[in-house]
Image 1 (tube, one colour):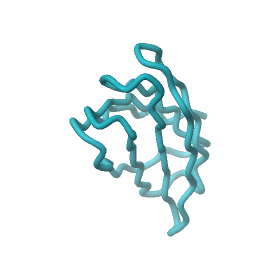
Image 2 (cartoon, one colour):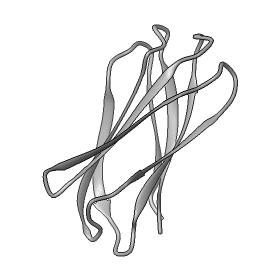
Image 3 (tube, one colour):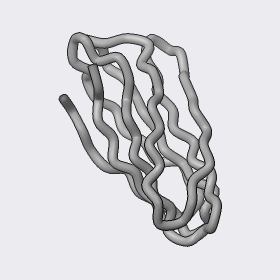
Length: 97
């Protein structure tokens, strides 16, 4: 399945687009903040014009896994990642069946 990394040095939203293969049901984001003790992570997917979003709280130095459903597979989709950590953060993502 497809995978990648999204990162930012501030609180700005960052994203990418790709063709979700047939059978992909959700995106698994594995998030990590740079400095905040309890950062929030906002992970979103977009397919067929509809956004699906999950917000979750993390802990510094601990990977936070967030699953967000895809509205369609075998279709071009967009995903975004954002954190409340003013020093930014990163996440790896993978399309899951």
